[in-house]
Structures are given as structure tokens and as C-alpha cells.
Length: 205
Image 1 (cartoon, helix red, strand yellow):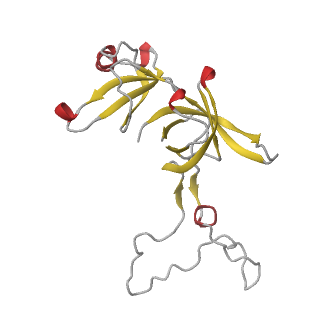
Image 2 (cartoon, helix red, strand yellow; image 1 turned 90 degrees about the horizontal axis):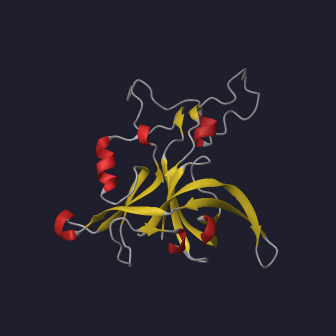
Image 3 (cartoon, one colour; image 1 turned 180 degrees about the vertical axis):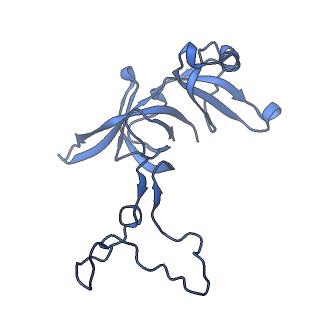
């Protein structure tokens, strides 16, 4: 699937032709530089490595500088490989948000917001005890029994319990492109995407 690297700007809403208010997300998509071209003869598969968002010279090293110098570019913060481009691109070419069209559907991947250590009510949607009766004092959000006794005398793997929540790779599929603002490298998609503001995301066709 061909695509681009982008940055989540934030959420807003647009009105459609029927006057319906549609929640949407604004993404700064590209321009991305082709930093490496994978070929079947050399690498065994065909793909394009794209780089997005310049690094400062202090944040880079000689190995990265040498890699990106081949493409005539400075070191990039985010590098992702994409397959399935119909057009032929060479090393150093730039791909802009014009790669997408209004009305088509895209998949957006990113890392979800980290929420830290959470209990079972927030993490898994448990109802808790629900009422303050049955002798409950301060156990309204407790998980309750997990079923283990003298046999099997252990906790089964995959048991839904409290723990660290968020910070996972998430892909949201089939988001409609509502608007492409080529002069500002902006892509407006319907609905929400994973990640905090200014987080890197990948947009695939």
C-alpha cells in the first residue's frame, strides 16, 4: 500500500452539503523525500523508503548523515517504507500530499496516547460492583474474583486485569479524505486517528 508520513495537527469539524457536522482530523502529510529505493534484484522486494521532518545536525550522526546524503537530503526524524506506488520515483524525489485525492479512503497508523497504569473499569470496561450495597465499603471499582482456586492454583494468561494502558500501535481503517490542501501540505480525514498532537502517523491508500 502506497502512502505518506505525516504529523497529527489536531481535530476540528466540517459541514457537508446537507448541513451535517462531521468530526475530522487535520494531518500535515509530507512532503516526504525518497531516501532509499528497494529493488527486487538487490533487496528481494520492491519498496520506497520515505523520510519526513528534518533532524537538527546535533541530533544526527555520521551514519545517518551518509545515508541521507545519497538522496541529497538532511537527516530525517521519521523513516518508513511503503510498497505499491504506481509511479516511478528516484532517489531524492519528493512526494507531496497531492498523492491523495478527495473522496478516497485511507488507513492511518500511529501510536495511541499512553494512559499509564489503569484499573479494570477504565482499561477493560468492567462495571465494578455498581452499587454500594452487599456490604461494600470501598470496592466499587474492584475486579472481583478471577476464578482461580486450589486448582489450577495460578492465574491464566490473558486474564483481564489492571495494568499499563495505551502506547500501542493502532491502525484506523477506511477514513474518508474530506479535503486536500496542497499549498499547506494538509490532509483532512473524517473521524479520529491515534496519537497525541504532533505525533507521527503513516497514511496508506
